[in-house]
Image (cartoon, rainbow, N blue to C red; front, side, top):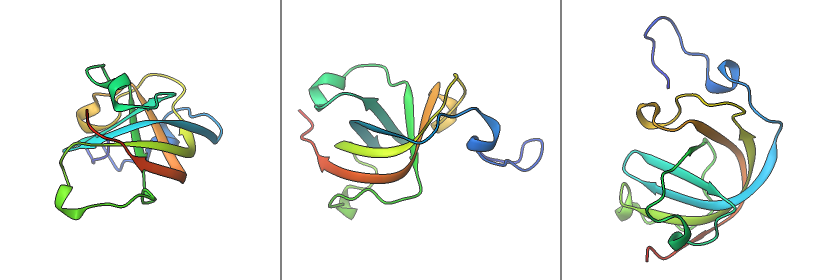
Length: 116
């Protein structure tokens, strides 16, 4: 969410209830103003055309080859990560479109998936 509409924003972890750190595996779809996470999915085909519910947020870099020429273009990764998942619905991600958020503190692996 961010911003200073009515004061200084102190961060999602301080404003919403989140789980204890947990390890989740799933598909991360990234692109221009998107970072969608689908836990338990293993392929792009499983999530293509579905409505995303979880925004993935991370200050740690994803451990996969990253082509700077593709910044903002659609991408898919199979990720294994540790972090905290929001416990109730909120307004997360780009323009608050996502009811849940997974804040990653550590990536164990990330493998790029074909977009087909």
